[in-house]
Length: 200
Image (cartoon, rainbow, N blue to C red):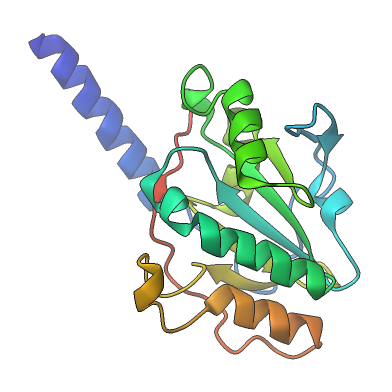
């Protein structure tokens, strides 16, 4: 029992150390791994480039069971709706590679995506967290917004409070609006708060 606890502690420390060393891509960075195909919940494969629309693409790292993701689900759907109206594509990426046989398995993703009404957005599997590593993503949920030229213009949280009624600044929606109009995004980076991505 003591050995098991030690191993679990080492694993947690390793994940935290890795997350602390991960650096997110900088504002202005071209869209990484744009052509990498990932399996979606509809059984087909899509790349981030496939999700790109005339005014850009929003890449969101998420999952099925993180309490923060669940708390934000209504706001996530609002962001998806806003993006579609503004001519910006959305792709949701599940990078929890170590939970593929558990709560973030492919069948569980299919059930979750259907329950949440992900009709106009692809919910895809990031094998071995390779896309998350390329982006430097560490949390769920975490947003990366790219403009029509494929350059990163916003990275961070959906808004400023995980309690919806207490949120005062809707960072993601404002960034979507400004990007769709060809304006410079006012708030380019914020701190993502959520569960750690479970890397292999």
